[in-house]
Length: 422
Ligand code: AMP
Ligand code: MG
Image (spheres, rainbow, N blue to C red):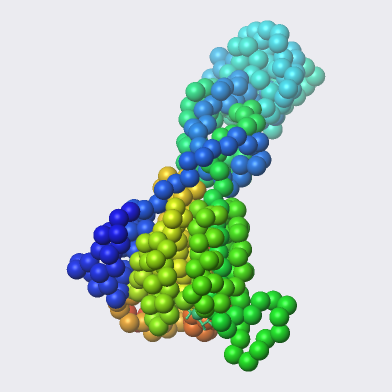
């Protein structure tokens, strides 16, 4: 990235540098992301949460053979009754894992269990509930069509088919899917390494007594949680005082040992000039006032080869900016080709919200299903950007767009469910 790009992003004419729209900032960040390239072969289970570095191709048909979807009787569709009922002889049994390998002639059927291979020349299963059994004879009526209750070979996956593409994030269903192909080792991208520290003279660490004016450092804990869920390797560098020499050495060390450096605090007005000088000396960083609440100040750039995110200090702002900017960027750096945005879903707002147009707001809300089966959302009580309880109580963000003004009780708003961030 060139110095010019960064100067342009800080003060281009086509937008107010004092207020950077959320989407533009996101787009700018995207332009500079260079995903990790190093790959490693891992045992299937260890790939959970990692990004595939190879297409997974099906080495076989799944299922391998036509098989029964139900417990019942396998027969040839020619023996189904055209009208009334028909009686067939039962000449054998097919179990899952133990096929019937004899011949099935006209007027004959085979007792078959779910998952058992369809015997030769049978194509239909009449379920056991639809037959009357009398010794070795079954009688049934018009209950069944030809081909019914039979799973076809390759119905789930065909030989050679791309089952999962490179760039896909491995979820529990994918582990099972890959296992169903008999594949036990998978090529994924290496883990992203993320270093982070908190800045502020007022911060105390757990275990220290709290002096007047001090607060316990909570940002490193929320960051720990959010980063752990993303499945990255973490380097927690503790609290760094607001001292240029200490900050410089911490930033340098972090950028040399990690792919991504995240700091909290020190980028708001007043403090920014000071960090600005330091960061411009060490790398190329833009300082934005994002048109959003909470999370107005945000810094982004590169220090050496490391991507840098300077998050605001306020505990709620840290989480909101992480979810809105850092999460996506990290997934891309991890190798995910095109992370899908967290869905926005409509819900009825049960409270009034005061909001001025001109910035995107991420209010914290509690989404519940009311007795009529409709989703309603209630904003948490205190929406202050320092009130972490609002995040803890919430299960969703109420996302109010830049153009939106006050919201009346009963209006429809858009929400983002927090669990989907995982
Ligand atoms: P700053 O962005 O550094 O001006 O900080 C904004 C507010 O967030 C101040 O009230 C800080 O005390 C608070 N703050 C900053 N860092 C942390 C932290 N790591 N944990 C809890 N609160 C913090
Ligand atoms: Mg500070």
